[in-house]
Length: 375
Image 1 (cartoon, rainbow, N blue to C red):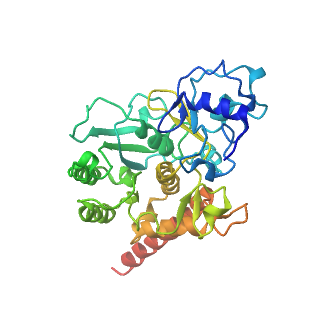
Image 2 (cartoon, rainbow, N blue to C red; image 1 turned 180 degrees about the horizontal axis):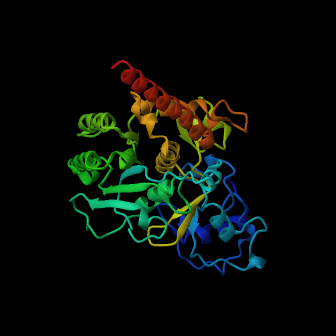
Image 3 (cartoon, rainbow, N blue to C red; image 1 turned 90 degrees about the vertical axis):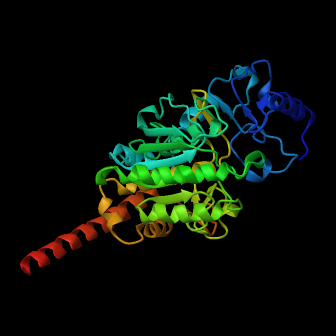
C-alpha cells in the first residue's frame, strides 16, 4: 500500500505510540501531531477489512477514552474520536429498541470462561453472580484485557445485548498448551465442570442457559474431553457458543463483520463486531475499528438471553439449542450490500421464540387438561 510522504510521516508518529499487539492508542497524548493527513486508511471507519490484514498494513486499531487528541485545527473533518467512541457503545441492529421495551435478558444466566476480570468496572460489576479463578501460574488478583471486552458485549449496562442478564464467570486460560504447558486446556475443562455444577444448584427460573467461550481451535491434548463436556453442558440445559466447537456455533451459520459483501458470500449470518466500544480492562472504554469472533459469541449469548426472557417454555422442547440457532438463521435480514449472506435480526429472534414458547405453553395446558379429564 503506497502512501504519500505526509501520510507516511503521520502514520509513523501514530504507530510509534500504539499498543503493539492491538495497534490501539491507549492513554497517550497525541496533541502535538497534526492529523489532517491521517485519512480514513489510518483512523477513520473501516473502509476495507483487507487493510487490517498482512504484515505491511498501516492502521490504528482503536483508542481508549483517555487519549488526548489535537484541537480541531489539526484534525481531519471526518474524524471525531470521542463522539465515535460514545456512539459505538450501544449494540446494533435494533437491540436498544428491545431494551426500551424492557427486553434485556433479565434473570437469564450467561456463563463465561475467559481470562481474569476487572470486577470493579461499572459496566458490569453488579451483573456478576459468581467469579473465581482456576489455579494456575496467574496471580488470582490480577486482571487481563479480554475479560472486560466479552462481559461488556454480553451484559454491559450500556454496551451489552443483555444488560439484565446474570453473569457466572470462571477465569481460566483458554489458549492450547501455552508455553508448552499441557495442562492449560485441562484447566479450561475444569471451568466447564464448575459451570455445570453451579447450574445444578440454581433454581429453575435462574438457570444458566448459555456458555460463551471466545477462543478457537480443537487441536490440543484435552480436545476430546472438552467436546464431551460441551455435550454434558447441553444435556444439562446450557447452550454452548464458541469454544472452537464446530457444532455449537452452528457450522456455517455465523460470521463476524456483516457490513461487507465478501464476508457473506457463503450464506452465513453476520454478527456486528466492527466499530464497537466496550469496557476497557483498566477502566473506562475502548473503541475498536474492527472486531472479531471474541465479541461475536457474547453478543449472540446476550441476544438469545433476551429471547428467552419470559419465554422459558421454549427450553422444554428437545434440542432447543439447535432450534434456537435455526431461528437465528431463518429470521436473519438480507445483506444491504447485496451479498449472499444475511445479518442477524434480534427483534425477529425474540418474536419467533416468544411465539413458539406460547405454543408450547398452550400444548402443556392442553395435555394437563386432557390428563385431568381422563381421571
